[in-house]
Each structure stands twice: as structure tokens, then as C-alpha cells.
Image 1 (cartoon, rainbow, N blue to C red):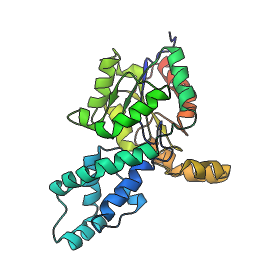
Image 2: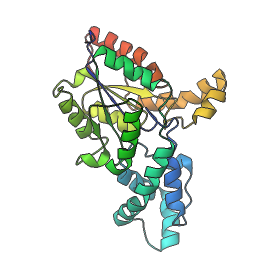
Image 3: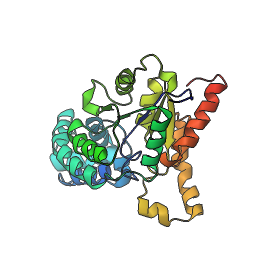
Image 4: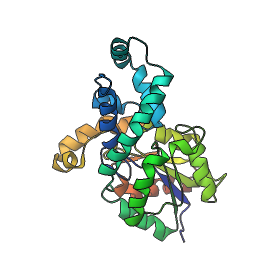
Length: 270
């Protein structure tokens, strides 16, 4: 069992433990709108990342440049009904894309094994729906990853940045009312806010996620100077979102938790 203060870690999925660069949702969003004659960029698609997918689609439809295209193409304003209809199209597209980008981020399984050795509980939350997640969970289990609980965006009445998903995880982990002993690890602003709103410590991952948006191939072939320059904005975004610690990826989780343990020992709280 662990001798640390931290009792549990709750991970996000895309951009945090799988899909380096959080690439799967982006391509699906671009194709979704293209099917309706609307051109959106990867950069635009990334802006609401971390929100439940219905809210993400609604946020895209509300962007002035996208809303103008929709008005021109459809002869009416983008509506909540449009967002719901697009979600029905998006889910199967996203499920296929998610499986195409389902490899674990390098270093994650080592970090997971270390957590288990320490007796630290592991759960997950995600902006993906249950339909999208079921094949991912099955593949992850085959690779040796078995979180004690996974909360999808449609498992709770209100998903990110609401704390409900985190609260469900903490309940399963036997840590209700002990949020200060729990760490949320995420690559997006809504995902970090989910942890903050639950009263937990938060760790932002800058290199592997949406904030940077590089593929693994881009990352490994970039120079150290190129990486550091590119990471400045990503790290700033995560810190401004309230991350207590920012690291490059889950491969650095041990160092991140050590920093939080230092804060706890000094009497600090989330």
C-alpha cells in the first residue's frame, strides 16, 4: 500500500493516456461539418476540446465564421436542434476515428503500473460518449489497463466542467468527501476545470494533448528548441486553466505527484 497522501488519480483519455496530440476528434469534427458544406479548420475544431461532444458541436456552430457559413449554406441560423442532429452523425465517425488513434501515449502503462504498486486507485473520465468508449475500453483492457471506473460524458446529467463525473469516480474509489487526496490529469481546460470544481489537485499534460496538438511523429522529430518554443503557449493555457502542476505527458506523472505531495506536506490544499 501507498505511504503517500494521494489516494487516487483520475485520468482523461484522448490526449492524456491515448491518442498523442488528441488527433481523433479533430478529423471527425472537420469531416462532420464538411459533409454539410461548412469548412472548419483543425485550430477551430480544437477550441472547445474537452467539452462533451454535443456541447463541443454547439460551440463550433456558435463561432461567428462557422455560423456565417451555416447561415449561407442552410438559409437559417445554427440551432440546438442542428447540434443534436450533427451529434447523431458524429458519434459513429468519432468512434471509428477514436479506434484509429487508440494507442497508449508512451510511458503511460509504466506510470499506471507504478500507481498500482503504490496502492493508488485509478479511474477515468472522458468527453467521449459510452458508445465511443466501449471498444476503447475493451482494447485498453487487453493491453492491461483496467480503471476502477470510467465516466463518459453521457453517464452523468452534466459533464465537464461539472464535477459530477469526478464525484462518481471518487464514490467508486471510496473517497467521497476526500477530494484533496485525488488528482485529475487532463490535457484540456474543461477537463482540468472538472477536477478543480470537484476540489481535486490537477495535473495538465502539455506535449501530448490538445493544447499543443502535435502528432507523436512531429514531437519525436522536433528539436529541443522547437519543442520548448511550441510548448510555451500550451503550458500557459493549462496553468491559466488552474493546473497545479504542468508536465509534458503522463510519462512524467511520478514527478508531478511528487510536487503535489510536497504541497500537501506543506499544508497546502487544492
